[in-house]
Each structure stands twice: as structure tokens, then as C-alpha cells.
Length: 449
Ligand SMILES: [Zn+2]
Image 1 (cartoon, protein in one colour):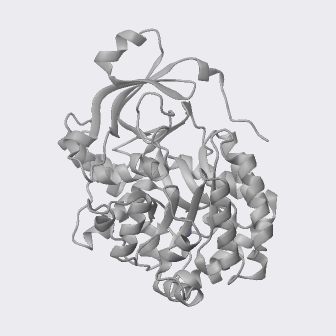
Image 2 (cartoon, protein in one colour; image 1 turned 120 degrees about the vertical axis):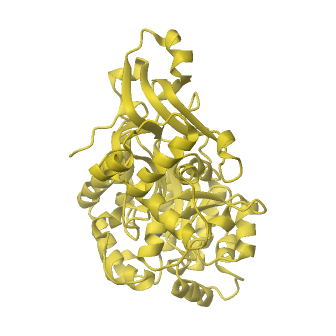
Image 3 (cartoon, protein in one colour; image 1 turned 135 degrees about the vertical axis):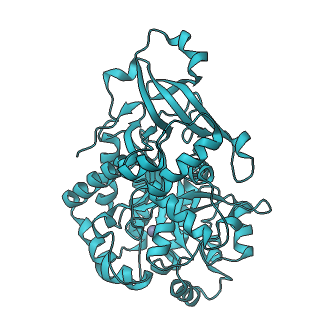
């Protein structure tokens, strides 16, 4: 097994100076003045991959005078983005034309995923995928591999080579897909159990029990997934729910005794505070309430939902104060059309606009940082610059293109209002070109060009 990447610089404190943005509370419920932390001239000190000190430069610099400081003038530092739902084997079939979910799976996705039986091939794509995440400023992701154990192993190995905190688990599929992508439920149970024992909590790796969705699992397989969750309560459950109307119709036929889609997962013990459900577009008040009460999370995938014509996620209802549900932003590549969480925020804004709501830049950034960390119950480790957290962060350029430079002639913001205006333009116009640097556990990631 590969060891987590280390470097000599790990033991020596390092510091970054510049403008920092993160969150101390949820801007959906608490005013920006109380929930957003913006330090126009800040200092971040980190050592051995963790934050040692964070605050205003003038308050901290005298304590750390001997430390070498890297200065990013006119840039904006934010916590590394978290992608709450993404398929690494679909990297090479992103942007496939002309189909909605069920036909899209049959035509493009399943034939591509079958190739991941070959471990060398899987490693090549896993490696590209992880570099692409880093190129886009994403330092943590909840990832679906395929039904093949080797596709899980190479992903974790490559993530550990980069010291990235990646959460993943073997995809469980036992019916309603080509034979090449079906596994026997008992065999998959044994393979999953072995992988949990190998990978969960190994370095920065964490494991998720991953039935693809209700349609491709038999009741026996979902029961075994529930058994695994009882045996290993601190692993995650990760799946899809209520993305597309035809999918929902077929699910209802396959599980006639369940009162709705969520109830399928409830019946098998798969709904709890470490469960992440991608999409949840066509769900009713009762399902929102039950997700809220269970402490479960939704991965909001706007580029995918628009591209596949799935529908508009009701973000306003999910973040209501009556039955609040944890929500994180996700690319859902290859149903999604970009690895960039900035592009994903831009489409999230449009999905909200189509429902008469405006998503502020702070709410959008929250969904891709601290909000997603909370959805994963990892807010003690990720999602902000709090002392003791892991030093995963990125450096953003508000003038990354000629158009962005024209739009933001002065990149630096002194006040929260100024920042809101400038950062919003970046979120709408920006992409991987806005990512100047990605730091993973305090080390500057080297990304192939
Ligand atoms: Zn998906």
C-alpha cells in the first residue's frame, strides 16, 4: 500500500499572506456579517499539514517573524473546494450528446464503466481525474468508482500519492445493467467489507457504501448494504435519489411496498447522518422532512441537472429553517459538464434564478466548502481556516482572463460588500483558469500541464 505523500517542508512551519475568505457559520441562516469571515490582509500559518494560526497579519506576524512568508497579492485564498458527488470513470465521457438519464446510462455510461475491469486503465483515468480535481481547486471529493474492486483500489492509491482526502467505495450493481457491470450481491458484500477494513481511515482515505441507485440493486443487495452500515457505522452511504421522472417511475415499480423513493433506502437502514443522496430533485415535503430529521445530506449537482434535463433542485426548500437539510455542491461529472466548482456555482445561481431566488456568492462558496464539509461530518477537519484543521486551500485569481480583468479592474476588496460584488463576477465567469495554486495538507500540489 502506498504511503501518504510527505515532504521535508512538512515539519517546518510555512505561512501565506493575503486576502482570505471562509465561513464561521451558515450564511443561509445567519447574516453575512456574522457568518462570513473575510480578512483583507491575513496570515495563515501551517505545519505538518494543519493550520497552526490564522488571523489578521498585523496581529500575528510578530509571533511568526522567522517563518518564510509566501505573499499572494491581489488574490483570494479560500478553503479547498469539496465536490460532494462525482464519478471518476465518467471523466472520459463527459459532454455526451442527446440523452436523458436512463438512455444516457445505457448508451454512454455503462460501456465506459465496463472498461474499468482493467486496473492499468483504471489507474490511468484515476490519475488524470485526481489531477483534474486539483487543477480546479477541488481537494476533497466523494467519488463513485465502478463495480470492480481494482477500480476502487487504484483510486485510493493515487489519492494517497497526492495525500488527498478522498471518500469512495465500490459501486454495488446486481440488476438492470449489462452483464459486464453486474456483481453477485454476496460477493460484493465480501469485497466491500475487505475494502472498508483496508481503506477507511487509512491516511486521509474514507469509505462509502455505494449502491448506484435503487434500480440497479436487488432487495437482497440493499439489505446487505444496510448490514455493512450496521457493522461499520462510521462509514458513509452514497447513492443517487429522485434525479429523473422515468427513474422514479421504475423505482416505484421495483419496490411497490415503499411509499416513496427515500423509503426504499429507509427500509434497508441506509438513511442517516453520514448518508449523501445525489440530486433529490423530485422529492416532496415529507422526504425533505425525513432527510432533515435523519441528518442526511443532499449533493446538489446543477450542471448535471441542466445538462441531462433532469429538473431544478429546490435549494430554497432544502435550506428552509423548518426542516433544514445539509446540502453540498457537486459536479456529478460526467453527467455534469465541468470539474470547476466555480462553473458549478454559476449554474447553481441560474437554477435558483429559474425558481425566483438569488443565490449569493457567499452561500454558493459555503456549499462548496464548509457546507459540504458538514454534509460529510468532516467540519472538524475541513472546510475553513480554523486552527487545527487540515491545510487544504486554494489561491483564486479574480482577473484570470481579459474579460475578468475588465470586470474586476481592482481585484482587492476592503469590505465585505466589495468582496461580494467582485467574487460574484468571478464565480460566474471563472473556471480552472482562476485557480492559481492548490495546497493539499500544506503542500503546493504539482499538477501536470
Ligand atoms: Zn451521479
